[in-house]
Length: 433
Ligand SMILES: Cc1cc2nc3c(=O)[nH]c(=O)nc-3n(C[C@H](O)[C@H](O)[C@H](O)COP(=O)(O)OP(=O)(O)OC[C@H]3O[C@@H](n4cnc5c(N)ncnc54)[C@H](O)[C@@H]3O)c2cc1C
Figure 1 (cartoon, protein in one colour):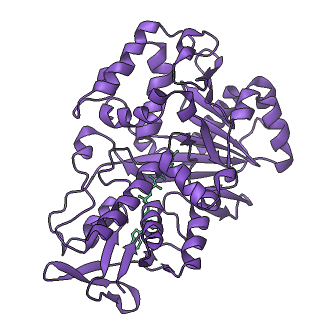
Figure 2: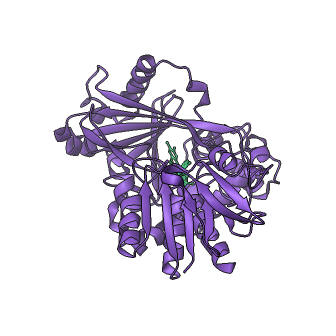
Figure 3: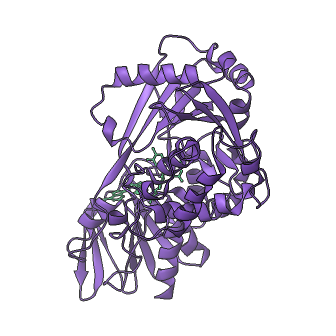
């Protein structure tokens, strides 16, 4: 029986493996790191004495592939969130706090209700949404936005976090793809959620256990070093313990990130074009006493109910309240590459205390508590029109070689949703022969 060898144990590689095993195929998955999950993983932080996610990941109810994934392993219950499309915000510039409430239906009644919409927005600004949805492949997000509160307090933060790219260079078409599957479908597709315990517990470990129970081979700590071709097929994977020699009919799926894939495939797909510009994401995790968690959530009102708050006018973009930890995400963070940790942590801690409702902020100490700074330098490819054109499809010039990953041509920015879909597409292409 043929074997599909999958290189890379992030969500794309796992999704490909699960789809193939479901179709009755044999798979072997090789992951360079000590554990599966790639950019979507949890780990034990000894210094802070708690479990952390490498970065906060927000999921929306419109992420069909993510919810199919959770349902396949019976893990939908492992998410937490407000259960409705509510997004608390705080503007640090003038202290305004509000909760955007998109309701449940498809008709966007929220735009007519001052208590549910963005404070200070004019209805005329909604034309920005139409321009984004109609934008061509070469258009930037900024070119579609009308200046005003809707852009400043909703569309820019939405774009920066969805694309992980500044709006001046971010692709309007990629943002529109996200909007078509969320905002344009109404509140029911915009309910936010995060893994209650951790990314690995919700999204990675259940898939690993499912695969192992069905006979899949999973090798961690196994770093592929290159591919060798014979005729028009890949015949060998160079790697630890003498590598892997393929039998006739075997396939290879490269599901590592873009630069690694290009390097691994250099001998068998010379000239493969992949995204080559990236954006960082910075996460700061601040530890607080576990016993503070329930009181903090109660005092935070809507922020406690949602589990997060969006921040305007600061370095911090999203603040997440988690058990024993307050976590901050800063997207499109290349500009922070050289920023020294202590000053950054102090500035962001001050923003957290200011952004939370006063009763919750007062529960947190004035001094910066123990923290962990995680800089993911190549968190995602830069979602610009130029980089979008460099995304390859799943199939390659080699009959038995396929590509997967959030950076392949999924039509979406680099997200969990895109990574899962890319893995399923690679599996489909493998099966189609
Ligand atoms: C900080 C951060 C925050 C994010 N927030 C969100 C969010 O809120 N919502 C959202 O939807 N998405 C978010 N994302 C994006 C999401 O995490 C990614 O799109 C997704 O995890 C990518 O999965 P992947 O399988 O394509 O790639 P990866 O996760 O990068 O997987 C590739 C795997 O290949 C392995 N590998 C590399 N080289 C080799 C080799 N030579 N041999 C074997 N294995 C190899 C790597 O170790 C890795 O495990 C975030 C990402 C980051 C970094």
